[in-house]
Image (cartoon, rainbow, N blue to C red; front, side, top):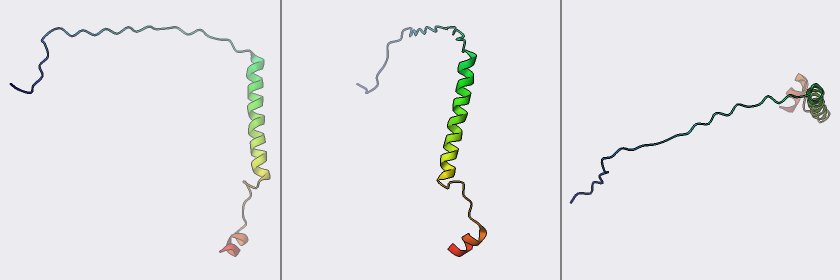
Amino acid sequence: ETNLITLRTGILRGESVLEVLKGRAIPISLWILIGSIIGGLLLLALIIFILWKLGFFARKHREDENNED
């Protein structure tokens, strides 16, 4: 007796089904597109304004950097 596992000699068969679906073009209204662009730009401007007010973009002068060391 051996510890080998033998498979029966037969035909192994596999089947795959590929279904191709064609997507439909969904029309987007022009006013929705323009509104989304404007809304995104306003949101970006608001985030930049808040960061500016919190001092995120403030640059230290060279004299201030030397005094801190």
